[in-house]
Structures are given as C-alpha cells and as structure tokens.
Length: 498
Image (tube, rainbow, N blue to C red):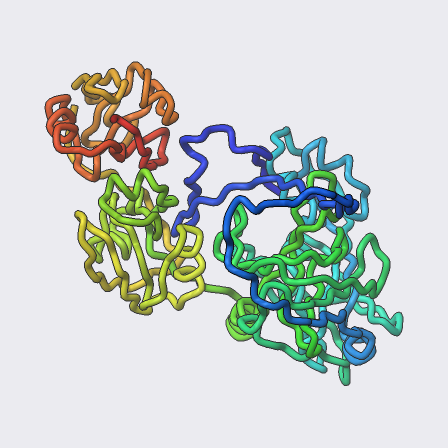
C-alpha cells in the first residue's frame, strides 16, 4: 500500500496526478444532515407572497417501492465466494494497527495511502469476496485482495474449501481472475452497467468482517466517478453498505445481473460511511478476458499530463465555458507528441465523445486498445481543430519532455520576481528555457506559486525573458495562464491580473 495525505496540501498541485495519461483527481469529505419538518403554526393574518409565481404543476403520485431482493439472493447467492489470503507485505506502523485479518484489505487503502511512515515486512492475512463466472471454477475478484498472496483459499456457500490459483491481476483497474479445481459450479449473470441510472436499486453480497454471504442494498448515487490512483476506472458510486471483506464481491441490479465489483469505500474511520464504489463489470470483463487469454493486461496511453479547466483557465485560453482536459505536459516521443499535441491545448472530445472534465480522459484513453487510432477534438490557439493520434502501450517506458528555450526577471502585475536560469539549473530541472521564480506577492502568491518554481510559458507562449512576459501581458485579459514547473511536474496556474 502506498501513502498520501487526506487533504490536498497545495492548491497549486491539487489538479495534477501522473498516470500515463496523467489526470487530476481530488478528495473531499462530505457531511450530510436531514431537515426535519417544522410543526404547523396557525396564523390569523394574511400572508402576502413576495413574488407572483405561476401556479405549480399538479403533483403526480409516483410510488417508489423497495424491490424484494430475496429471489436474487436465492438464485445467485451461492455463486458468491469467500476468499482468505496469506502472505507478507510491507506495511507502516499505522497499517499494522488494523485487525490482522483485514491488513490486506484496501477498503482501508483509500485513506491509508495518505499516511507516510517507515515500512517493514510483516506476515499478513486478508479476507475478501469474489463471484464465479464459469462453472469450471473461474472467479472474479479485486487485484488488491490477492496481490502478493502466497496462499489463496476459496470457500463456497456449502462450506467446501479449495486452494485457488491466481491466473493474473491488473492493478490499474483492480481486477483479478483466480481459479479453483471444481466443476458444475453455480455462476452469476453479467449485465450492462451503462443501463444503470442514479437512483436505481442495487444489491451487494459479500463477506464483511468475515460474515459470509451478507446481503446489503442501496441505490446508485452517481456514475463515472474518478478516484485517486484509480483514474482509469469510471466507478459506480452507491450508498450500499459495504465494509472490509466485501472487496471483490458482486453488485447486482434488480434483474439479478452483476453490474459491478465492489472495490473501495470512502471512509475516515475504516468502516462504511455511506460512500462505496464499484468497478463496472464491462471494464472487468475486458480485463478478465486479457488475463485468461494472455496472462497479462495492456492499456493504451496518449502520453500527456492533464489538469482540470477552471473558469479562469478557460477565460485565459479563450474558451467560453470550462470543459475538457488541459494538456500541461507532453511526453517525449509519445503518441501525443507525434500527433502534434502541445502544452496549453485543451482536449474537448475523443472519437466524438465529449470530455466534460479532465477525469474523463484517462478512462476514455486507458480502456482503449493500444495501437488504435483516436480522433481528438482540440482547442488550440483560440480555435477548435481535429487531431488523430495512434495510442501507445501503457507499459512502454517514457520520459517527460520539456517545452522550448530561455532565461531573466519580472513584476508586471503578476507579483513575480524572476531571473534567468543558469546552465546548471537548466540541466537539473531538465528544461531548455524558463524563468526562475525568486519572489512572489499579490496575484501570483494567491494563486499558489512559490519561490523555486520555474515559469515555462504564459498563455501557452514559451518565455525566456522578462520582455517576453511583459509583451504577452500587454495583450492579455484579466486572467493569464502560467505554465509552472515544480520538481518534475508541470501545471497551468490561472492568475488574475485585473
């Protein structure tokens, strides 16, 4: 398990995360409360409305009845299995405080990853769930359930126990396929998660805290959620009660079809808090097919770093509404570079499908086939154009490229004091141009720019001197987009100057 912080520490870098495509994703904690109905009070004076609103449309009586899931449980509950794993893993002191049987269960990982600490090798035991997809013993579960396990045992609902073989797993989508030596097993039916709508009823079966075949139900809260470290998966968000041990278990629709694999919960306590996430079964099917046929999984990549387009950034680039994925960095010799994509371009669509947010792009690219062609609708230099790219393989080794030549010093309304980079600094930063930020105040400081950052470009135009910066600012509007490099990462930062 890796580490992160539960809150984003720097507003400058909150939007950027690397992934092959690299897309930004943040985390927030939500607090819910219920409004109570106020008691009626009899009033003797006339109430005069402040506004003359048109009469409301007559209310329609819509009966919403909770479905009876008993038939689904009877038909498919026996195809859900309990998984017990043993092995060794590197863990922090905080992780070792988790009950032993759940130390390998990343229902905790969503927030454990935000804790730093020295790691050490410790024996582990883990519990999880899975479901049978073929009568000869093929089982789908989560990669995090079986990854690193030296022993995997599967228990059926009739208490038969088998040693399972891990055929393979894919950490990018958190899907694993295991097999047990048995025949004539009950199986589930797979459905189409695209037909799900927010508000639809769904059912989960699994082994929370080791309680075999526990049944819980709820509704779909949202679709196509992107989570940190899992930006390639368009998660189904539900309010179904799932807990450690549910990992890898099925999520059913009201037709009794599996539409997802329960994978993560959003929690600050380690237990269910009303936010659970499932991997769509069509994503799992694609991955499982590759594992079964080839023993490995390939994902496509475009080779860029992207960030969310805010209103200020949209204004800076002449885009009417904030949408799409802003290209902050392009990998050297990548499919994106070969197609002509540049930092400052905004990807608006992929094969005609709109990119509403930067989080949409990793899913659209990563789940495509390596070697396939994609048509990108791109906002470039204040106008829209079309670019065709041939996708690469996510496993290819890549290095992030820099952008162009430079060096000098500025204030000019931004609140920046800058100077040229010397040859040694350029080599260390891996850049061929730019201005080193030595001081910040006013708008630049409010935007999160820090001394030590490197100013690479202003409004998509490379800068190597203060005169270039001033020239660009003369024709700029009230907001400019500064391309800033900090360490090896780059991000566009909108700065208000008027």
